[in-house]
Image 1 (cartoon, rainbow, N blue to C red):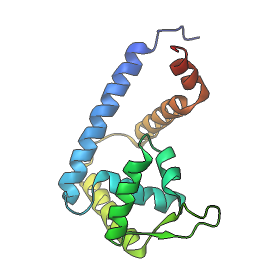
Image 2: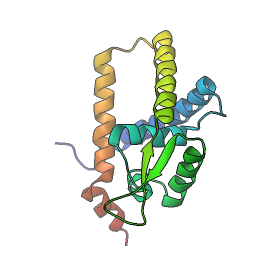
Image 3: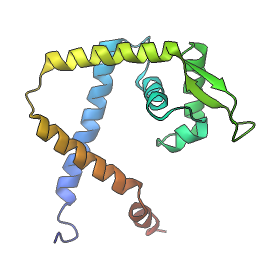
Image 4: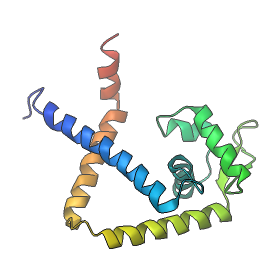
Length: 158
C-alpha cells in the first residue's frame, strides 16, 4: 500500500518531464511543418474532429482545458482556410456542428505522414513495450486528474 506523500517526488518529476516534452513536441512540429500552415492548436482541432467526428465548439472546448472562445477562433480560421465547415445541428438550432472537410483530412494525412517519417528516421531506440507502458501511465494520470477525486482535492481548499 502506498502511503500519502510517497509518490509526490515521482509525480512532480513526471509532470515536469511531461511539460518539457510537450513544449519540445510543439517546437518540433513547428520545425517540421513550418509556422504558416497550421499551428499545433489548429492541428489538434482537426485531429479531434477526425477521431471523434462532428462536434460543436462547446463540446470541443469541454474536451480540452481551453475556453470556448479560443476554440471558436481556431474553428473560424480553419473554416476560412476551407479545412472545416459548419453544418446544421439537429440537436441544437443555434450551435452548429464543426465538420472536417476533405481538404482538412488531406492536410492532416500529409502532416501525419511527415511526422511518421521523421519519427522513423529519429529512431530514439526505446523499446515499444516501454512506450506502451509510458502511454498507460500518462493516460492513468490524465484520467485521475479528470475525475471526481481530483475535484474533491481542488474543492477541499474552499
